[in-house]
Length: 337
Image 1 (cartoon, one colour):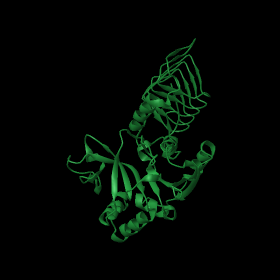
Image 2 (tube, rainbow, N blue to C red):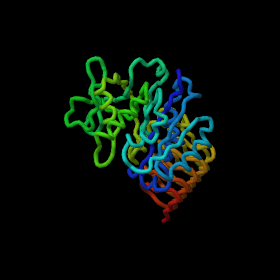
Image 3 (cartoon, one colour):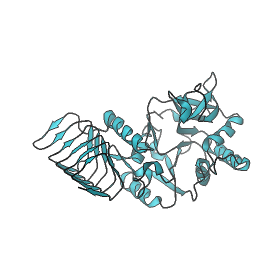
């Protein structure tokens, strides 16, 4: 690439759909399949040309930087990351406006709770002005969709269409060959006050660019995973464990444990007299004794004793003793019989 690619990741917001997990940590740091949502999002870009020169720009709410920066320094020390604060919740375009100094040259804009399987290896050979990644969905009325012409070029983006005629949902990943054009469109969006309930949405800025004859093509993906709700997080955990994230390939019958893949059990976790799996993720430092865990996400540091969990998500350092059922607990919670 002629200049460094910038990957812009808006991640501001309270993560209210993931509470109570997000009461004490930003939603990109919620546990998922042995690491975090953020780690899996970053893994999407392993095929980027010249990854060592790629720059990341994280746009965060006030108070999020310390935890996210500490995570990046610990687990991704070689990545070049810029941290930008969005002081108020005014939408996606407003978030990008605060990072406008980095909207120069080639940029990818990717939302932090969306995961796709895609190769970016040919990005440096892109001929179009822009690319929108899409996925065909059975019912497009819950999504934003791309209306395309016979050549596969985007005419406009439509938020939550009323009809079923167009089923190409935009997945929250966009490429712009000239990022400054996006900055100019956002500025015009502000001047025209194109907003909804006080928030400025990126699709409206892109539609301004399309009015100005931006050539944007679509690229379809086969796998689009969501990590924005507790139910979606469990679905995504199942998929990732089935597709490469399990670190146990065959059932294990130890003297006092039974492990049923697919599962991820961190090497620093301690499991005794328990049945783990299928579809269980167990984080570092977890301690599980005399329990059964399936279809659940256990964050680092949890302590589980005499408990049967299914369909549960536990934050960091949760303690449960003597219970059975489905639990969704934030960091440092405890539940005891």
